[in-house]
Image 1: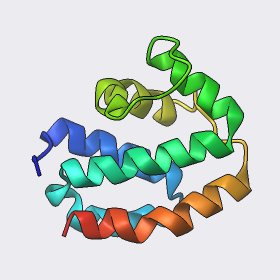
Image 2 (image 1 turned 90 degrees about the vertical axis):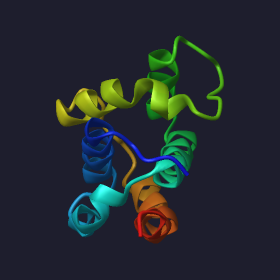
Image 3 (image 1 turned 90 degrees about the horizontal axis):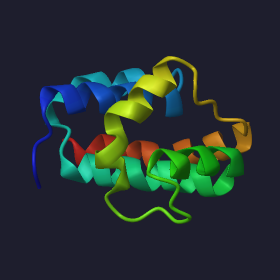
Image 4 (image 1 turned 45 degrees about the horizontal axis):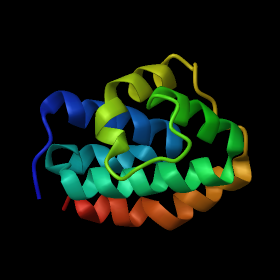
Length: 115
């Protein structure tokens, strides 16, 4: 389990803020403990959201060089880009149902990964 840099932890927090709108403040208390397990679970959550939400999947695969499928470890490569684009509202999630499902399935696991 590797520790993330301070910048990477901020970027993870930015992504959590978009995925877990209104519920992301609980992650502030464990932000300093974000690690590779946290990143892995966040990657899983984003992948699930993208699979549920086709327009997001097309955008994300474009970010990683037009690959037709996402490979494990893709998030670390584009963490800064996705964080910035989410904060600038350049990436939007269209499906509330997809977002609610991802929140329900991943929020607790991501939180406990940093404890």
